[in-house]
Image (cartoon, rainbow, N blue to C red; front, side):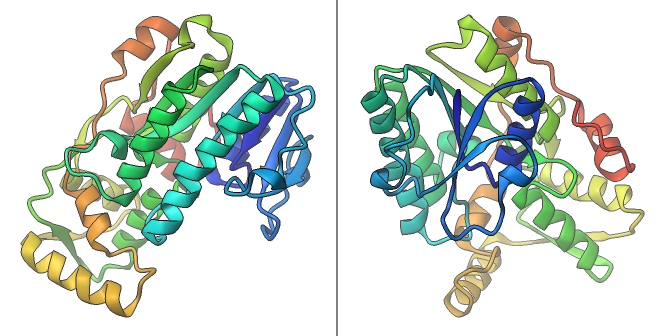
Length: 302
């Protein structure tokens, strides 16, 4: 039995579908007020609870022998909520594992955890990683770069939306030279399956990145081309972007255009996955093939 958190999210839902199709028995933690019910998509026992509240799910560890902890909150959510879900939620999952004698835990982290300058999300991910690696459990940490796929992930979908809505001219913060390595959702699922089935993955932190490194400005161009659009890039000085972001965040706290978001878009976010490949066989798609599946009408998640 596998206990899956974040089961109604973009990665969690697709992971649940994949594992259920492989005959895994699943128990999924879903927020009490979440209208999404994973049980309508794949066979699972749904537990209504909150990772921030251990008592809300503490009674559901019977027969569980592994945990995959996907639950997360990303910007533009407030920093205090991000920390509560990421840090307290991870501490609660570790306590849950100890209470029931569950040895195996896989934690989905993010490239933000290793940024030179961390935003609130990156700081919380780094702290959660430390909790997991020092837990004494049989852990694996998977550090994801920007996830993309049909209808997601969150920040990729937002970038696509902005490119599509821009009236010919698309503003890029700063030089646009930040190195990104977007990872296709099917490769994230591959990474999780390899981690659960490979003994060598225990006690390791692996980078889960795509097969292509691309600059932010070039990613914008590739998205526009994939959508059949013509967009002229203009580069806006970061000092002006930060001033605009501060003003907009004050008026619209939930805006994606925030100082935290800018911090993420202007730092290198490429990760070397060679060790994961060598030890577990992880082999991701290049961006061209991944984009063909996202924008070309294909539905294969590999």
